[in-house]
Length: 162
Image (cartoon, one colour):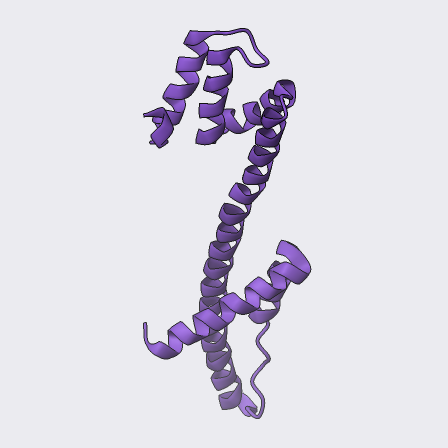
């Protein structure tokens, strides 16, 4: 890919990001559909003109299809990037809420907040549930359950759990 191609790709990603922020996924899909619409050839007439026009339209639609495929690929990458970066941010807020509850001694809220996070793979929440079960904070003391949560956190290489 040359510099011009990279520049065009970066511009398109920026444009798609703006559309996603303003109009969501539906707006992005509409933008991509609009890019598929290729105006017909102008100035070609007669029987030879009809043949040339058909060939030109075929080439134009081929280019439009190529652009559409590139744009869809870019859009899917963008959507994936947004989803990947947004999910940890939402999970981090919930983790912090659980930590604040734990610090003020509201172990029931900490447990309620961290359990879904831990079950979905949040290593810090898994580790902290292990501590709660080990020390009997908001739950009956259960060394086996503590060890199970610590093992899940260790499986993700959380240094405290190793």
